[in-house]
Length: 255
Image 1: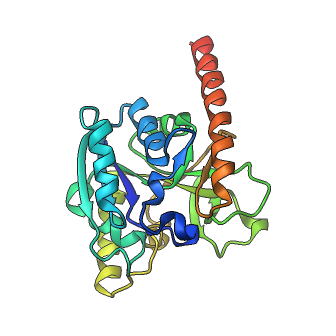
Image 2: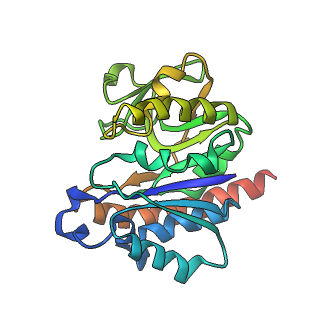
């Protein structure tokens, strides 16, 4: 299964930190955010990776080639309009590689426990969006409306009292959903809706296509948007390493 990593954005909320450098290359405990993400997909035997780059594309591609060239089947796509577009446009650029096929898409600023990815793979051929249904605070992520385990709506418009969990930026598409998604994305891009997020084409599809809301089960994750997020992400990564060891031991004992 292919994995799409969206790394084209400028990370404007990080100010001068990302003026000349991709957010994905910010150092977290001795290696870039991107390395932590890639290594977790490799752990899950997901090595067929498409990276959509834009801002500091040379730095991102250079880093991947220098460190993972023998571990990945890598495809790089350059979003030449990264300054004028949002992440739907970046994902739309991958359509010839993933449309009509199962694939995973992940925001390139995501930091997560590798067993969240592992658990996503247990959903088989079904579409699924990973949600944090344990979060007690309001965060800057899309909420969800869920009924019988199925997502019916998604977005920041959903009030907290109805929120079934925050979408954490990790989505898996079945072949049928993939085709329907890119058909809808085509319509949006042709209508020049360049500021749309990659979840927007899903909204009219939830009624006709099953998409599971898959809980993180309390496993840790975050994303990196502001300078204040950096120390938090560094501390969380330490927690995640401990958490991963404990989860691995739990799985071993269960088996």
